[in-house]
Length: 230
Image 1 (cartoon, one colour):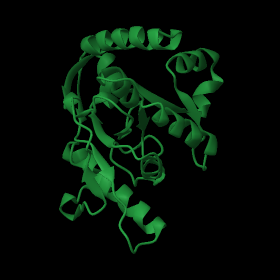
Image 2 (cartoon, helix red, strand yellow; image 1 turned 90 degrees about the vertical axis):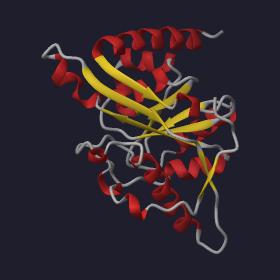
Image 3 (cartoon, one colour; image 1 turned 60 degrees about the vertical axis):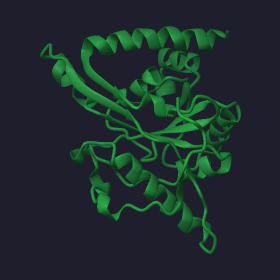
Image 4 (cartoon, one colour; image 1 turned 135 degrees about the horizontal axis):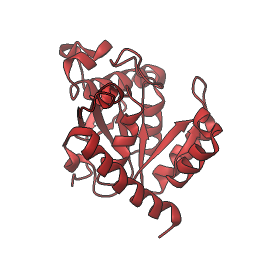
């Protein structure tokens, strides 16, 4: 076992212990994560804890990307490296990050992605970007929607010595299925929209943001994953 794998296992144990102390945590749907094979864990992003919780609490190893600014701190950079993370430049097409993402999936591992592209300042879902759908389609892997709520209140409650109610839901995996007769760009936009609704339905109503109109959700480009759950 590599040093990186040993570090991840040890760090996840420590994080789970901390979560049990700081949070009133509810974890739902871990059985929906595929037993084997590559997959993308698609998360909403309100708190810095959202990706940390997803990586630490998932039943399988998940590799996360992190904004390149986090690598400017030598200590943070070392921890991220040991965790197997890789940098991404936000606000541009980062081809190196795309290659790294596809490599993770080629190795049959989980990859964490936040399709909104950045942390939401309103605590609600923002418009999704097409990068996640593009990578999932190119790699031919299922997507597991992961909805995280409540963790953004940790700092406020910790100062008052209160545990923070938080919830993480692993939804049912799906795959993207292109349709004939549509331009690729239009299909990607629709795939992203449909995937974001799958995420929205797992969140409390006040977190759904621009995807609050669940009655308008469609599933033309989504099919159930053929990879069995746990």
